[in-house]
Image 1 (cartoon, rainbow, N blue to C red):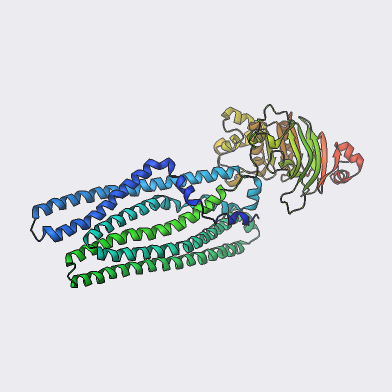
Image 2 (cartoon, rainbow, N blue to C red):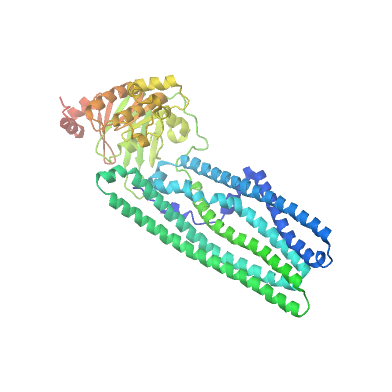
Length: 590
């Protein structure tokens, strides 16, 4: 089971550049973003004006019994509150729509980028962990994208407006607030980094749970076959306990954060009351001014609470964004070169020139000094022990992995110098472990050429000898194949995979032990489809059953690090080497 690449995980930590990259996702939604901020501005201005109106009532309208003016101002405030309600509706609805669109953009970007990453990346990272990067890690992005700028903007406008008004009313009391607020901001800033670190840990543990779930569900039949359900539950429980431990640590830090913030807020209210009472006793201020100030304290506390909420949203959202960013900064190990050339009118001539390959620089060499020439339309068979490098050799042709040394050419062009899309479109691969998508049989066959007509799909199915089986199914071509094709038999899955290769119509064909898991009767039936499929194509066949490759144009015996024997079936039997021993065991020496 592939583990997460430690170097890959370390890339999630640095935050430099994260905010700039995050802000770039607002660009396509700028109009919606500006409308959201305009509505937020309206909300802030109404909140600032209401205490001013209250002070007027206390100072002017009530003492002078200005009933008409009071009624007009009350009606004006009612209109303002209705406008504020409409602005709040837009902020809540459109703001969240903008947030979810940004989240969708990020999810589309990371999925598209993951399509570019090579096999080696997926060899080192578990599926469940990668799923977390695409799904759960981005869930908090919606809230951060919506509320983050909005809360910051409202807080800035409200605090600025409130301090301006308060300073004009009583500067000494305003000075008390101006001392208290920075202390709260400093406290919030100091706590943010710790919350960020623990939030990243929680997300890593969540990814671990997703990996365990994905692994357990994918292997549920194996678990049941071995009666290991309890062991699977134990593994999952262990992962869950680690998650609970991390989450508990996060909630502890969050409790310290919120309780500390509330303490500072209460101390701010107490400071205003004490300072205000002192000024009243010194006859430097009256009670009405203190009441107005207390109302503004509430107005100041509201944006401060928004800032604390923003801090929590920021830590969770940016922790997810940094993990998202780690994948987005992962460079594909295999990609088109800047001057990649098209590969057109492929004939199927393949040549390996002194090819050496290792999966990792610290591991032993898998292939060493391999030289091989395959003519157009020729069938080449590869035999040898498991792990000898047969599949690796074939995977170097479509550049699933990059050669460590030497070169692989198709029609005389180095595969590193041609466009990947052209190269892979010219190659069809059928493997032992057939993967079918959880859609219909039609969708799975048409995957070979998405724009194919129904008639072309049916013809491909007939060539693969699966059409009659499909027509006997309840919904014909619209029958659901199930997860990984579980609703079909092994032979049916294999023939569906052959049908989509017929539809793709590549010039080069790779059959990687495509019949080794099938019974003899099914294998004979599929072999007939393979014979039709291979006709006129350059074909590489990896097989354990020598009966399927007896008539190959050339047979290569691959051992440790390279080619041991080569020749036709008759030549290798006569040679009396490794192949002759295998053929004798299979009863093919006569």
